[in-house]
Length: 83
Image (cartoon, rainbow, N blue to C red; front, side, top):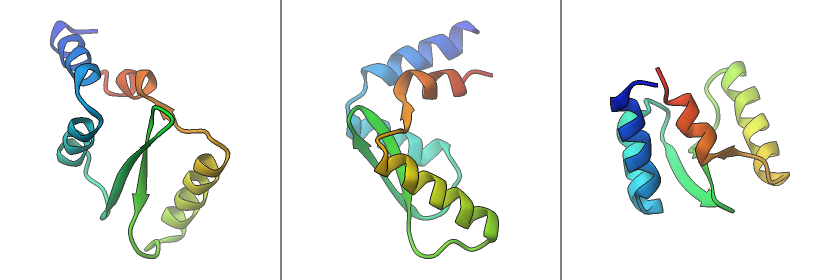
């Protein structure tokens, strides 16, 4: 991992939940919705009905993950941010 990415990941971990959510809103292009934290994991809840079949399937999968307590742990999000 490059030094810049490692520094960014370390700084991200030290942010408050609200600061993390604000950061994600700025760096991830996505549909309107809301980021929430549940049991140490961040989830994105889209607003309104899905626009395409693919988005509908993604939404259903996300809902199932939330209902079953699955999600993206912050350390996994950190790995996904690696270039």
